[in-house]
Amino acid sequence: MSDIKSLLEKLSNAHGISGWEGSVQQMVKEEIEPYVDEVRLDKLGNLIAIRKGTGPSIMIEAHADEIGLMVKHIDEKGFLRFIRIGGWFDQTLLNQRVVIHTRSGPIIGVIGCKPPHVMKEDERKKIIEAKDMFIDIGCTNQKEVEDLGILPGTPISIDRTFSPLQGDRVTGKAFDNRAGLIIIIEALKRTKSKSTIYAVATVQEEVGLKGAKVAAFNLDPDVAIAADVTIPGDHPGIEKKDASVEMGKGPVVVAADGSGRGLIATPQIIEWMVGTAREFEIPMQLEASDGGTTDATSIYLTKSGIPTGVISVATRYIHSPVEVLCISDIDRAAELVARCLETAGRYF
Image 1 (cartoon, one colour):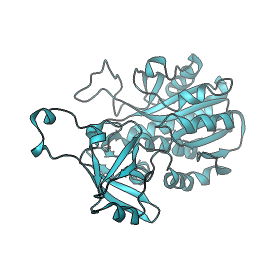
Image 2 (tube, rainbow, N blue to C red):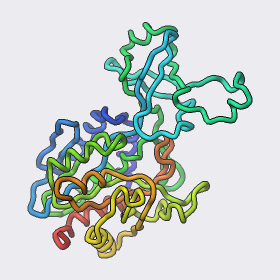
Image 3 (spheres, one colour):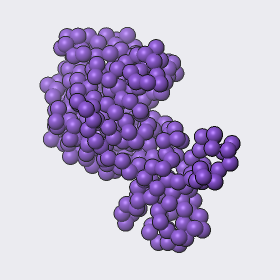
Image 4 (tube, rainbow, N blue to C red):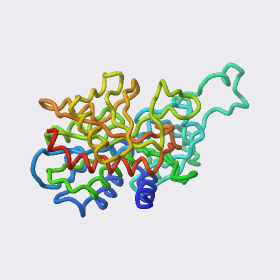
């Protein structure tokens, strides 16, 4: 599992917000190329790796993008206003250090707001919203900022690096969904499947499941697996009745998400994934959630319908710079996907 840990560190520390996934895609290409017959990018930027075989054709995918920010406005004193790209809880943004990605290189900044020392009492009781924050890069006027190559539309990511915790638990940014990328890379390395496999690192999942829709329409596979992360109910502030899965208990097979407004996996999909896990004695968990959804929602509604399942890793503090997961869960998730690639012909 040391290889998984080192690759997660590399991918987590990389920067690739929605629409700007190029550097992450290059890393995925380097990892995946030895195990496939062809690698290409489509018009939207999805990385598509193909291992040629027989039927059924199987798409395994994970999104490459992370949530981030984008420059909206530069004021006369050189402070940057920004928009959020993807789903942020505003409280997690305040006082973070960020990287502004210009064509000439990265620029470091910090997110600030009005000092609490000068706030009125009622202001201190309120949550500070992103619209009231700004980024300070140390410049004194608008021209200095623009001379650095920073303009409206310049992407911004969080400046946070991977760190080990106790045991096999680690923390970092963008485990959602760099963990999923490792699952599909590792599954390709391990599987002996004779099926045609499309391994896809999609773009712009965090802003509307966009890349997956385009890739699935293009490839039109017989069946698909989305690899992602999900919320565990094993820490303070959340109860098992609200999120039944736990870190360290193995991959999560999703029966439904978004209270059914997202994916509802067909009985055939559940039988395939659960049956394969039991056959190969891979610990796994089942989940039905009322939270968010994944690329699977776009994939399974493409064309005349593509049977699609989700295999996730329980991850704490999703959509923050300090996400936490167990390396062993990624390892077991990759093993389950690898074995599902081999058993798919029995079910489809």
